[in-house]
Image (cartoon, rainbow, N blue to C red; front, side, top):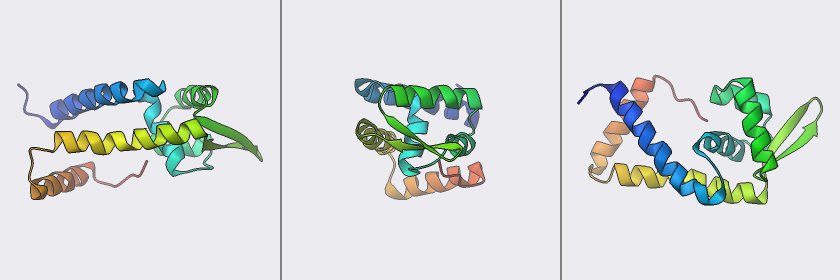
Length: 136
């Protein structure tokens, strides 16, 4: 088996996407909608341009995701000057809570075999490799 960071990053991404999809399916959410939903939950009143930039999305994908989240009742979109401000609906609040919790639950499962100090070191090293802390 490959002993590269790229291999493990890809494997973890695939595992996390499958885990998340299984958990969010009951709400009608897909893995691809997870990050826009969480971003709006953490940045209520943000514009689509802010979300698109912060998450590094292309405009078309962002537009489709926001439209779907609004149409399915997860987000609200209110006109404010030239831009629309995004917020969570009641259904979105429920989905945000579950979506946010998925990260902690997955970490707890994946890191269970590590001692607390090993967990801390691993996360510090991953943050160092990333080179910067970009909140999303």
